[in-house]
Length: 361
Image (cartoon, rainbow, N blue to C red; front, side):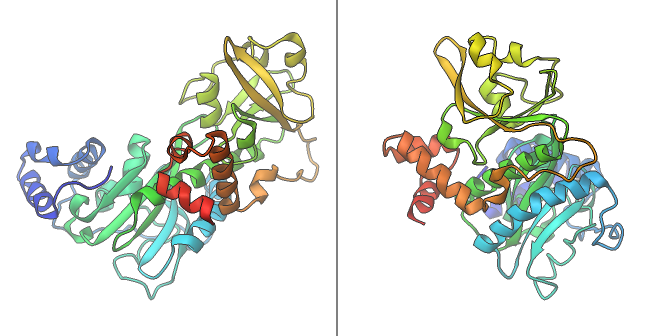
């Protein structure tokens, strides 16, 4: 969603749209068109100052346990991203599905006044401040880039923001992670890192399911124990409880929404009887046939935890810093592609420049 339209053309489009000319939206990517329309429908005017509602609570303690759980899963990734890309005039945060900021990394109150209201406990919705990257990600479930006069409010013309959606155990959007600041950054570089941070955060959500078997799946075993692994939560009776977005794609499951009632026998119907018997048994990663010409490697990560006992150790991948996970995934992808970095970058969903930097670290 990179900017290709001149800033003056965007200014003219905004003015025309404010006068009721919907045709002016054609200069924007479709998700931003929808966001401008929602902003106007909410009564926001392009020339107004942003309205920031009062902080919920004291800005430190989150009321909703789901918000607290998501914040815990995201915070390690925000810290890693901040170490790489943070600085004065920039902030990184996670917003929940309603646009409420629930976790943040920032330099402090001495930063730009335009960014100062972005704090934990503040809602940043389209009805308050118009089009932003997290608002687009939350509404349309897409990575979003909004910069300069792509913002609906004129006041945000100096601002760059980029976000990645987060998904809950049912594959529904539950939040977004975002970088916002004054100036410019390399969107292709950031999108690769933020995508992997989102995947790592989503994988941590599975650790909260204490009463299930946790399984990892991937076509390439070298991507197990990285943010690119698929995760399956399976009940003791063999029923599939949840799957992350990587596993849904690998196994042909619905991309969004609660999963249909499925047993592991049905999910792996193409496997041999011996392979199916091993699905919920501890041990090293092993190959499981899916169908004609297709297979995955599956590893049993954790059995159900007994109730009212001390929580078991987190899945190993959660203890590994994001940067190290990314480097390892890049190395494995490059090896699998036999040195073809363009192919490896496509498989990882990142740019060739990002892959090269990871391999060079």
